[in-house]
Image (cartoon, rainbow, N blue to C red; front, side):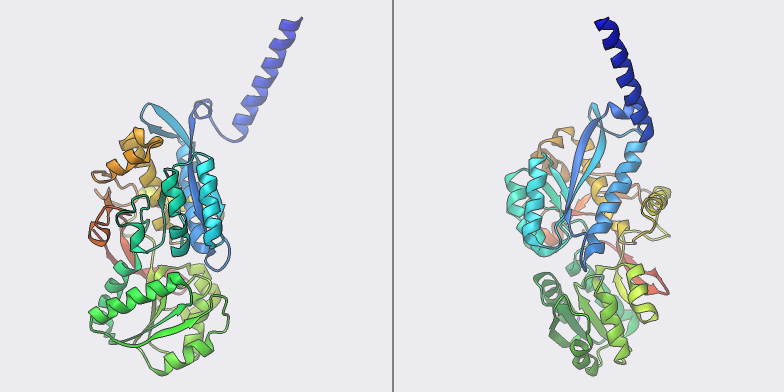
Length: 400
């Protein structure tokens, strides 16, 4: 009787397990896969929320896609990818807490943080706990020796800024340039880099010391003296997506007719809702893809993302890359699963097909010119111009 009862109980539990697996669309083979946790620590709330939300949604979309198709084969094992997220609210102290949480969970690869302060704050925790992290932050000290655990996930402002200013000088006749930035370390650092690049190009800098508090909502007092100087180009250094349309609208309502640009990625929907036609002509760094170079896999990623979240952010054309680089580097050296020293060894010679671009494009690590070591993901430098609710490609470049 006991054996029969145990057998019936086992059969019932087995039936429940089968139903549970079927309910979430996971096959028996997938259920037997190992789990690989990849972390995210970054901002998903507040004025800069679009930056981190794009990260998280890109990772979740790609992970779900890979899991659905059987998981990821690394060495002799196959893994389901589990994205573990932490909203640092753009607060360095919370970023540290988030990275500590990742360490406690045994996670060795983390995407984020999204701003300079957070990326610098988590460095000691990452280095002490064997974590490679992929910030979307620009301080060179994070990527230069003796630092070695941070990998820049996008094009830096000191790489895109000179390219944008040069293009506008040569193609739009820009001669006079003005800068305005939030009174925080991240945008101020980007402003200083922009000023340096503008000087190198021989542009006349008519304003570079004007700042605002990040919670400002009326930018008229800030921009009135700048607009009076009639610059050809107004640079919104390090501007958060929620503030960009407010600054653009204020400048245009004051009668400013010149060009406006930034080296930070933006959200077309936010621009449309906050500035409308005033945002037409606004220039920003875009996602690392354009319709002309996007592969069929990239197009499917966009479709899956849109289906999962009901909308798409162009910046995710860049943010899709971090998880891909992590997984493909682990495939190249499975010993790196639990040993980031092995990951670092692999980075110098790593190369893999780029699934998101047409042709024979490759994934590789770059940054030797900017940082003296390969601590940057190679992604196309796409510069966009906003028009009538959408981004249009202005030009495409690259860094080494």
